[in-house]
Length: 91
Image (tube, rainbow, N blue to C red; front, side, top):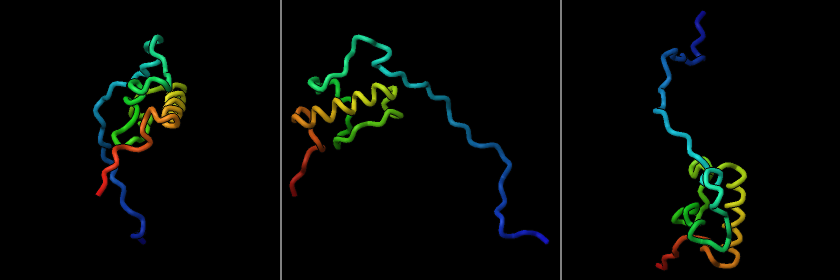
């Protein structure tokens, strides 16, 4: 008796992703660059146009520096050096 409820799985090869170079944390690579909430020019690199913080899988930061960046962005937003959201468009 054949079991028709179980789906057939193909045993073919999986699609391989092209090799992508591993992103390097810019703060680990260059020790002179510091994370400071009073420097919005540096922090803007880690914020999208809509004001969201870019995740570390995209930015390439290590977890330690990503936490510091997040904290610095939140502090800069708190004292209005960075916008909380992107540009507001009035209807």
